Image 1 (tube, rainbow, N blue to C red):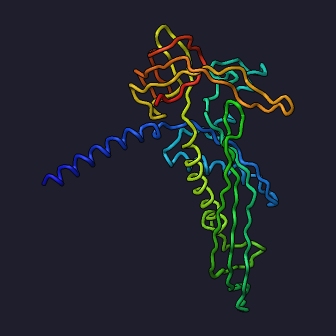
Image 2 (spheres, rainbow, N blue to C red; image 1 turned 180 degrees about the vertical axis):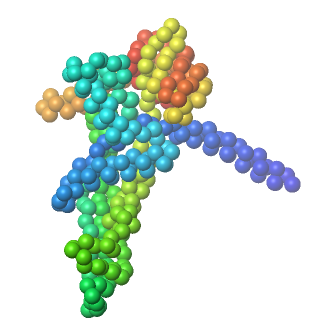
Length: 301
């Protein structure tokens, strides 16, 4: 009986500690998925990159681990801002340049392989224009993903994922002016399945890589003793969370290449979240001073 009691208490303590340790990991980073480049030799398939970017964005949303800003949303907002900036339309508060939802991480991709081969075999049977034959299809898809710091533009990491699928079956073709009445929807084809496998692998790989990148937010504005942030309930922030406030110094650039190397960060103090909305939260200063709009927020361990 005592052993069972000790086990139960130990299990309770383990779960409690695990829940607390897992708390930080639950904070959802805001990421944006950009259009993929199509570097394959597939002619007339400009939509491959767009379609795969949309698939990845949807899969990341379904994973429930991130706040995802889709490529199309980014493009629509930028287009609206361009119109407003050109003077062709009345300038609105919602279309000011730079007022895109801030994403901590940008995901860009390149489709490097998008191939499908079909080996056909016939039975020699052909009756009244109807032919019966067997076929084997093999498809291969490869995508290179780059994880980019949206503030500095620096490539933090990259990963390559692949998907392969094959199918065997009997194909019935009816020759009526070249129209193939035996086609199936793309998702059911080996190429469609290979694409989905690559996307699924991409979500796993990105989740693993992004887990190693510290969560960051920003100060939106200061109003008296209240600090407004751009992180809220959608990021899994809760009341009582404490964040460090960091000031970023002058950007360091390579004198030869012009590449941005980063910038020094100085911790000015901490804030404590006390009120939360979906997309933002309010906090009070715990320590330090000199906070300003745009300053970086990181988890306080």
